[in-house]
Length: 139
Image (cartoon, rainbow, N blue to C red):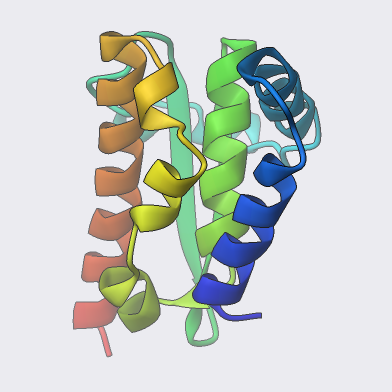
């Protein structure tokens, strides 16, 4: 599935909820289904700087795609990284680098997060793009 298709699917899912409390609950639910990072990758190097809570992100190249795993010590943050991993894991580095991020605004995520969580979201996206950049230059 292409990144754009996954993003549209996420926007559709979020549009089903009437208010933000339901959306928060859905984000938390998504976090519970996050494929967890292996303990050995919960290192300082994989810790995302700029997040209020601890978020670890690991990316590995699998053929020509990047597979991401992550974890967080906060339930809401875990859900946010789960959305990003669903969107960008198993995608080509070049596609990740070219991806339009407007779906974040379409689901209203940034505007409904505290400023520190919104900064964390930006940091998560930046880290995903950094992995893509690193793997893209290896081609």
